[in-house]
Length: 152
Image (cartoon, rainbow, N blue to C red; front, side, top):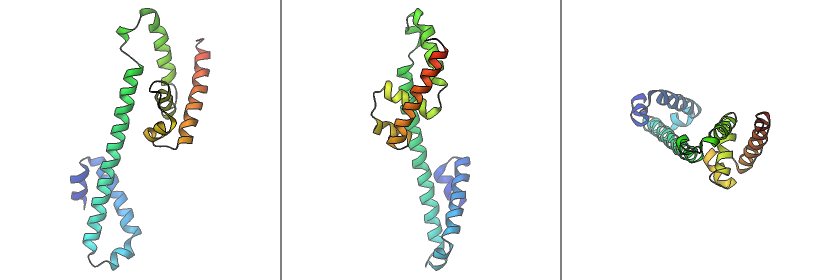
């Protein structure tokens, strides 16, 4: 079982986590497995299914991170291209946004830079639309506080 999971997942740490999930699922379905005509095949199917679920989850996370990184690159352009007088202001804004909690900062950047709607933000962050709206409202309020402290 471990060899199948390790071959599919290919990341030893993630394979160990997936294997723990598999063992929990097997324990929960023990009565069903005992009554199955081919318990070995049933257990292997659980292993394969959970392993591919982990791969899909990792791919979703990688896509999210790539999208957020590209958005960050557009928001925070190369410093050499900025007008020298604006460098201090840009650095201050960058510092203020970096102080926000992760999801609040990401939601705010998606809304202000990409002009994304709340549904799209929710999909990218993996939360509900209401939560996305809440992240943005809290980020704006917190950013306002930070900027007031910095006298901007």
